[in-house]
Image: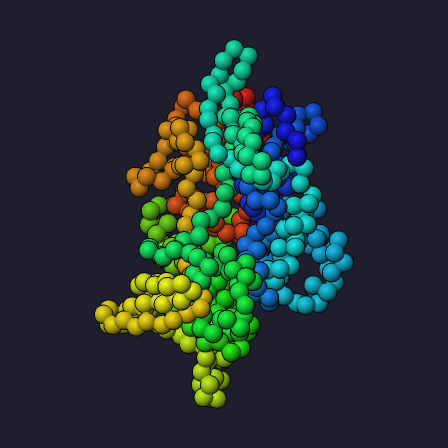
Length: 436
């Protein structure tokens, strides 16, 4: 994508995963985006191409949301970027309907995302890492704006892009337990397929997976499938897996209306959301996966050939490395004292992600951003960071807003509606004559 040196964009997107992809689509489809006064946008992504959790595209793994919660449908049911449009163009619409399943495989949904990205590829530049954002104060003939410094990850060359607003969507950061380091034998789930592909399966005789969520269960199942001679251990801090609540009433917490209820609710309201509905997404597993793993374990017990092991109420205390040997020290939560050690050929931590923190990226710009009592960014309903009066440019967050907007902030469920709200905000502020 070409960007013009002197142009001031209405918005520059930092990162180009599903959230900013959805935003690019919403920008294209917004009724105010006319040829007379287009909403000018550019996006920058440090990866060489589009990708979304590529290392967890396990065979037969399905999405945990309906196909209708795609990049556009909840905002615009007539969008040409909907999942249904993708199926139609791929000549699979009838087959998908005949399959009678609301939940496509992750591989198919990823293909849909790639298909949608191809339709807005002229707005994004890959191999481009944003290293700095700084403010340029208003002067004679020049409005206040932001300068975004973009480094080419291939050549190392840097350039500057100007914008009235930015939207930060740099994704989540893989989380490892304290004291644990990744290497060629110790992996995080975010790198699973790539790391697994570098191994000789015959060398994997003992493998272990740490975690009690969906990714942990799916990786355990995958390793059990792919390594028929291996011992596969699931290390669980809980007493087995907990089922995800995907019943209709519980799923209402992911509706667009629920964002309003959370945002404008009292502290008691917000606490109730987390206390009663955290099991819709966090550290829980789909019922069919739980039942399948239990069935396999039971059948092995009946046959007297146990190779699938569940170490409940157990945490990894230490990982000892000596050459290619990896020894895991396990701490029992049952009595709080006993320990055991086990040798593994690969150890996978499916221990989740840390939420987005834009502080380091914003640099000196962060001094204009207001924070709450716990030091978190205050965020307006339209996902714009609350800033002091000296800053008229907008900083929008696509992620990292669980404390203000609730459970959907890091999920796909609401990105179509959220993207539309961000575009509405940009257009309305511009239309009102605000210098944004």
